[in-house]
Length: 463
Image 1: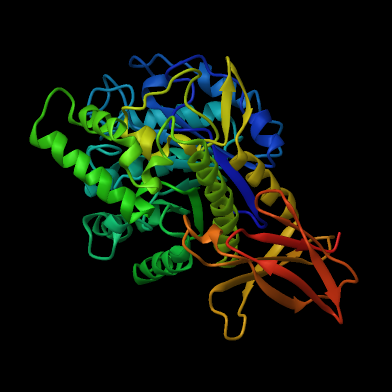
Image 2: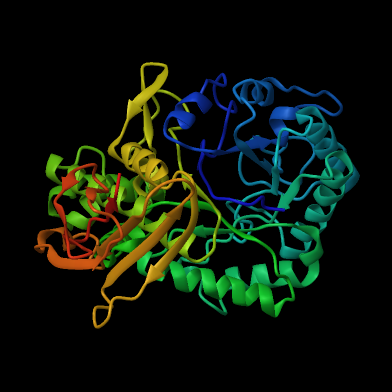
């Protein structure tokens, strides 16, 4: 159910048109080279009252498509009247009546008239309480209703299982999160076409996370295509120093609660920002410019690394989290979500227009351009140098492409000097550019390309 070829995509965000008038964003995503667009749609948006359907946000999105994109819609079961938890937003929860839910999905799918390729039943349902207020059995029941509706309304569309964040420490084998998905596979394996793995763990574990997920699918007898419906980095949980400082602040806030413990903990962190580890400071608003720039460089590297690693493992769809803030002009530094994920947006608003490109947007555009026409990505072993990650990329109608970096600490590794590297090269010349968009020296001698490799991935091409 995943067509041949490779597509790099972006997620608009966790909402579209839910908190403000839906604005244009697909042209901006297309300019970055995105060929797959993922959006969220909430039951509360489409059917605010029983039997009354509103397609303003859906139509605003569909009107931006030109037919070249693959389209992925995550349908969130949030309603003030139709679900167990009465809400417009989070947490989604089980429908009070599954027949009503199935009618809603059927109407939504038919309205989109075959323009949506992937329909997803909620997102990260193992995050119980925040992104799914129900049990695994209740999720399977709702997935069954969605599967029936989608296959009746658009048989060619694929149903995607809610995303699995298996790269996180809390999702290790035997954890409640992993057990949640094992139950989904056991009881509902026939109810989805595509498994969505979210790659937020350390880059060095991406290949292991993909293989572990495939092993889980095989154990359940489900050989389903695997896609990366979300990925990006850095975020604080990848740095022990940052995690420890956050835990200390949260513990103090909960020990002496005054108002919202979350806001109290965040206020405490900002009061102490100058004394916090730089690995945490860089995620905070108003951090020193040199730390802001370092975080940006890490972000650029991670976008390149995660795509190459996933593609080399046979994943053919990767979707970057996320394109842009939910609405213009909103920023809350006292929100834990802002600290965790606020700086991952590729684009920012200038007034009401989504036109500010962050360095990560340039990195995404670079990797999309370099991988255009990609047919195969193969990691090659470098004898006696396991710290080197080197990939040979075959591209349709284009010359050879080599991508490489040295695995190092994500925060301090850039302070180490580059190391010499050479590799067989079939062309007479080579041109190199790194993940930060900076040209790098590359010389061809005696059928080998010679260059310097560092923490920053470098692309080497003949053209």
